[in-house]
Amino acid sequence: MVRAAVLPEDRTDILFHSYDGGGITITGPSILVRKGDEKSFSVFGNYYVDNITSASIDVEVSGASQYNESRTEHTLGIDYVHDKTTLSLSHTTSTENDFDAVSTSFGISQDMFGDLTTVSIGFSQGDDTIRNSTDPLFREYADRKNYRAGITQILTKDLVMNLSHETITDEGFLNNPYRSIRYVNNPGAPILNYSFGQEIYPNTRTSNSNAFKVRYYLPYRAAVQFEYRIFNDTWGIDATTTEIGYTHPLGDKWVFDLRYRNYEQSAANFYSDLFPFEDSQNFMGRDKELSPFVSNTIGLGVSYEFTKNSGGFIDKGTVNFNIDHIQFDYSDFRDLRSTGYLTGDEPLYEFSSNVIRFFVSIWY
Amino acid sequence: MRILTTLFIFSILSGCAIEPWVKPYERQNLADPIMSFDRDGVSSSYMHHVYQARESARGAEGGTGGGCGCN
Image (cartoon, rainbow over all chains, first blue to last red; front, side, top):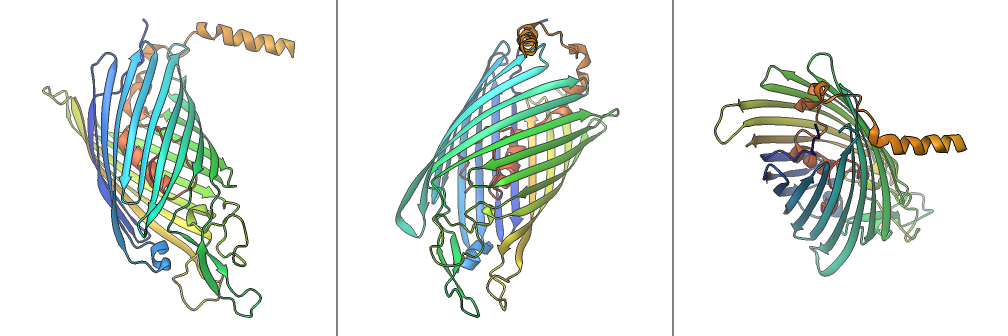
């Protein structure tokens, strides 16, 4: 029997998300609707919102007050299946008061070798417009290109593996316009003081990610997953991500997920928490996202299937709740909100976040 | 080296004739939804966004990526 590639399932997801940590609260919905003709085409639309309230360490240190903003993202896409080939095309727009992003993505995947192997490649083109809410004349641009390749391989009747690679190139204004560096303003003095200055980033960045993951069906009905990703970029950042997960169904209705994730990165080569003097380098950044740090996540998920084979419009549905606790520990980013310390001796920054996803999915 | 090259070319050319070592009727475990790498795309895509906005590493997460506006 010749089997064709499979269209994505017709389903709708209504998700509420919440992020709370480091002085930032972000909530909002994400709604996905997907419908196909059961033969060749499947179209989808996704509506996503971030409602942000921020009094992060960066906002506090800059002397600004808490702010609120929102980001709205729309995606439209189509998948087309012919024989063992799937073509995918999608277009996304993201809008906020000081940042607009537009991206178009194309992908093709091919099942081969008796459908044991799926090879996929993809390309995305993104264009960002960056503004500054404190400067009406400020307007900068950035161009992003993503190149992806992957292979999914069935190894045994209980084991599947995936290898994937992605190269991303950025060109343009890559700074965050609100962030500052700090530098010693009286070098050589017995007691050092510091001032803030403007960040200067390179105008280009290229990064490479390679990921390996396997998923194994245990002798009883449950699954384990292991994932490892290695990352590097032309800014000198090296990072690794390691994730393990366990999925355990209970009867026909319940599915429980448990996961642990570790992430470690080194600093960008133009990062410093405290530059030795003003204009000491061509490129300078003090974003904590460019500093060396470790994050650890532990997450729990539960899913309940509320209908099955009941006839009517809905084939089945699930109610899902996930909570993830993330701890960030920075090894060269100091908490400047602390007082009474010598310059450069402030305590290192750390914070934790709770991330909640609550969603209902229906298949029809 | 020539032998290795010949073997490599032969293996590529014979690839189309590879007999699937996991037969379709042996794939009931792999077809179980709990074996999906990405059971709920909307939900996992959101988590990728959470990490991308706070970590420098990006890419090879399994989604389409690009222009998420997460800076």
